[in-house]
Length: 300
Ligand code: MG
Image (tube, rainbow, N blue to C red; front, side):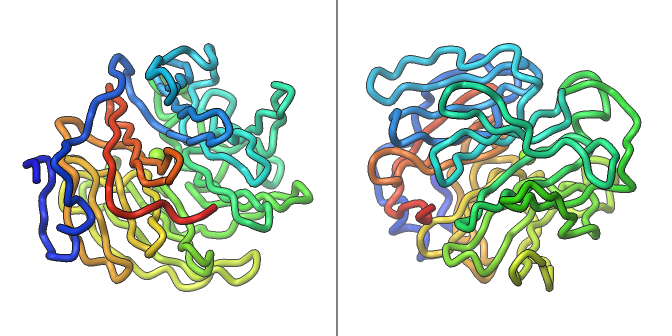
């Protein structure tokens, strides 16, 4: 096993039993984020937030091209149930959907009549609802968006109903960031990166119970032991694969840190892809990496 893997629990060894280390597929981003896999196109789309662009990696050729530029300082991306791209944009302070014809539909840019801060990450539930986090990183300065005064009273988590109505589903986070559902969608995990603005602030992932269109509970699942947890995805057995300061941390559903995929750059987000959904794509600051592991992404 290459030394790119740190096995902290025997249960992790079987997941990374491979002679192959992660490979770097592309470099040259300022800050890679928001990987989203499109099986129909065998391609991965991701964001370069300060670069104000989205890139696309083609599995069939390995080529990388510009997907969209300017792109509204994009951050998190995902694919909805109809195969469409859903994007968080810092610049426009909105969540958008790219239609099959290429036009862009705004799903949310306000709550209670006031502009959102800067949507960061997004996930779509099987009922068609869209859930996203809204920290203020994209309005803090002009590097990853446009500096502005917040109009909301804090950094919250929101849900967009299939009807289009936007509701606030959690208001007790400092800086909610990455989010993902458990495989059966009974749980929503949300990371909080409040430590970026407060040395005593949170650097953890919380677990909330999904009750229809509401969230309850919200206990801390795990504190990050290296930097901050940013974006993450779950595998089919409910383990979390989370971006952190030294690579990707694999967490058991009970919060135990099982092991790490070590990388030379801090990781912002990950995504499952490939025909078997067993290839983990990793956005790590300047670069896109991929690694094959012995599990699969939770089904959509
Ligand atoms: Mg994020």
